[in-house]
Length: 294
Image 1 (spheres, rainbow, N blue to C red):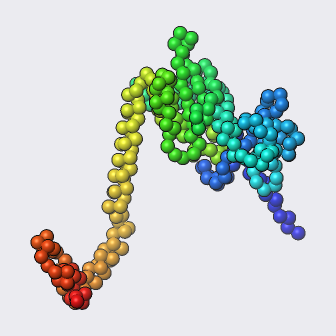
Image 2: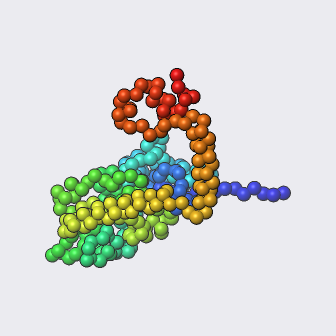
Image 3: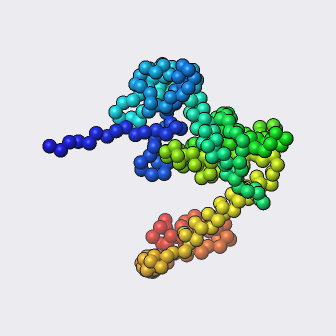
């Protein structure tokens, strides 16, 4: 007797997304709550939690949590009230704490390009922080006499960068955006590496090097123009393998056009003066041939 293999539910990473086994950032499920706060203030991951409310955990928003650990869906927490399973506060704080822990471990991070400057910077500390609708980290660089802060905001969904440039410019703090959307369904180790080095990043505001923002914008325009030129070449220049098929199609089309011309002899080229003076019936005849006349 052949025993059927029992499929185990997929696992989630620390951001709450299902770890995809199908490729790079391909899992369709939305993020769910995967961290709960114990009564003593420590955090417990969903994999270590007992089913139901046995661990008396609470969400970042203060709601009581129930551990959903069935045999089909990836394990996750839900609010005991049954509402707000996709709690925004829980997701943003989970992302911020995960990113801060990752950067504390590396003690360095890749920054967007600044002409003539290294692309990796070291720092003394990394603190989790939520910036509006974006999870992030605030790192401190330099010494006590020259302490500089850099805010790092993370995108986990495809879309525009946060509209917070003016806010950071007003307070005089540099900020950059890191796009984690292609990495959100990967294991924690890969996500951590993306946070520090691998993921694409750009300046939101740079207090000391505003020219870096201008250079970054120019690079984006150059890439867009290059992409358009590439697409134009791809569409405009057939490959050698396509030429015989194209020539055959053109020959067939020309033969049909010649036959139609012999039958109707329409006049396709019409001057501006003729457009203005000819009657509608005559225009139809000249454009489409005698068979379309009145």
